[in-house]
Image (cartoon, rainbow, N blue to C red; front, side, top):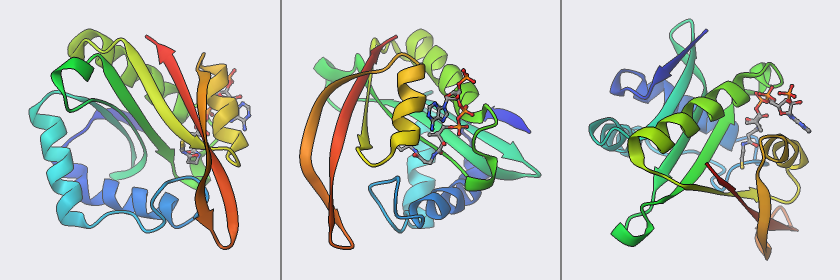
Length: 162
Ligand SMILES: CC(C)(COP(=O)(O)OP(=O)(O)OC[C@H]1O[C@@H](n2cnc3c(N)ncnc32)[C@H](O)[C@@H]1OP(=O)(O)O)[C@@H](O)C(=O)NCCC(=O)NCCS
């Protein structure tokens, strides 16, 4: 297993990994993933702008990813939004923590990001435990933000100064 910088070479594999976690229907805002073309453009943008996205790669396949991406407006570029996912079979082995630490280092030292924010479903107690352990704190709640299969879920907003 290798931790590598985001690269267009792995865009298709990353797209499959996001789709796989999305289709679990529990953890990501999307339940389908994203089309290969838009994923490719997304990765290209990240690569060209030296932004913080890393992949865990095993046997030439992306098995996990993490990114911390700055806001669109100049006045909000000191804040980065975190996204992370590990394929089901590879969770609980320290990969998430390694990817998170690597992304935080990059975001802080190369992109001048000072604060990392994220959104996590209240039902995702595993991820909330993971984030708390990494030092994240709750800064708010968006009540009944998701309605899936007839069940409402809140979104917890968390942050970490890096
Ligand atoms: C959340 C996720 C990224 C964590 O990655 P991971 O590789 O499974 O976690 P790690 O093995 O690196 O765990 C790192 C630390 O967090 C802790 N942790 C992990 N899961 C935890 C849980 N359910 N409760 C409490 N702590 C937890 C571990 O004990 C570990 O602590 P340690 O460093 O003291 O040993 C991963 O489980 C995942 O992809 N889940 C599904 C997708 C998802 O929820 N994405 C986030 C959407 S907001």
